[in-house]
Length: 146
Ligand code: HEM
Image (cartoon, rainbow, N blue to C red; front, side, top):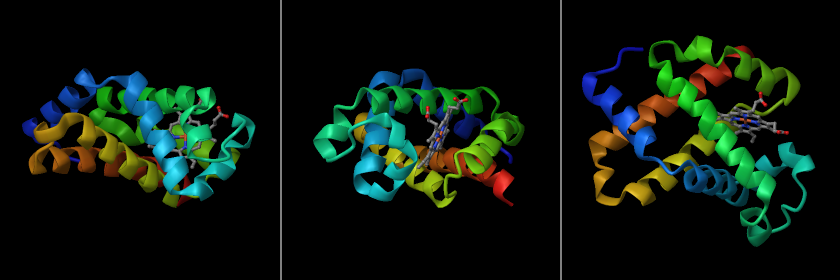
């Protein structure tokens, strides 16, 4: 993958300014609410019974931050996201058995949350760079499934 200077700066900028404690939980809980079949992998997280329960679930909040920490590793290794996520790909496929279609759903939820927090700063060019970054992340996570 080739990155333009604008794309690199945009990704660094988004993650540099991001409030992880807000965005991580918001993105994961949105995914669990809007795509309820994604709940099946979190059977040990306790009460996911309805939207209020998901939004108030501390395990969901904590895991939302864990996912973002994973993404930060990709930001720091933008030129080799594939290798950076090799282990995570094995974990999600062989151990957790997550259907890889779900990666894009979570990525889209994250895009929506980031867009809502950035407001008018989330221009079409910024969106393009962010979605390109997430597409590389998703593709890298899917690698072990091929
Ligand atoms: C665990 C990242 C998508 C289900 C994890 C961990 C990370 C991570 C960093 C912790 C790994 C560890 O403990 O070593 C990501 C990223 C994703 C993604 C970057 C995509 C943007 C998903 C999706 C699902 C999922 C879509 C299911 C719908 C899980 C589960 C765990 C996990 C069940 C174990 C949770 C636990 O019991 O603590 N993920 N993940 N992940 N992920 Fe993902």
